[in-house]
Image (cartoon, rainbow, N blue to C red):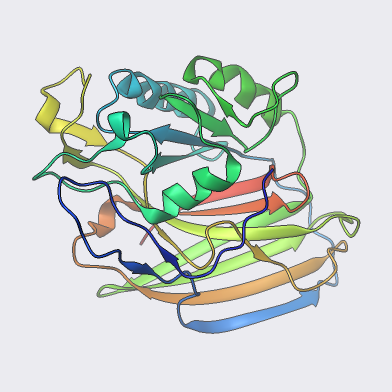
Length: 283
């Protein structure tokens, strides 16, 4: 895995004209609570859930097939076991250049994640739990392999339970995060990331089975609560260790709130793989 130092980023979206690069601030939104303690009773372990990240683009003929594969896997396993994020990046412009006059799904956040975990040589491709599956030496895999790789990861346990809650007042979302370690993981270092995704975004898509300008883009990564590559935990990960965090975030007017989900991911700092993931509907 290549080393990546993440300051404030300036990313230029790929368009037909020159634009002033927007400044992307990856600092956390306003924090109303951030605490940690050791619980008196060690909790039972949650089942491990698996993250599929679909590296995709609007000019990719086979990308709708990858999206259909995600729906198939989730329907078979349930959304509590498999969580999806669609990464519309600024890599591979022949696949990812946005269409003029249609909603922009590309983001600097998605581009940052793919820069770090590995840029594929073509699309569709994606990460399953950001894991490297031997004998491969890269993290991205063809969508035709995702179901088998998910099945492998679902057999694993997880040392950390993730619980998410959200409430909405107007356009302000309050998000409560609770992480509890159900076994000792003090020999490892973990970090967490919290993302906002949006589904049912209608736009242009090459290769879509429906009319190309009425394609529905789902699980689109919209926002990262802080560093998209993760925020380290600030205490030893012993059994019973609990972290509670609470964040407020004002949703931009263009996001359709009822189509948004929160996705919380815990990764291993050393291996980069996903330790556990959970998602809830924003409400």
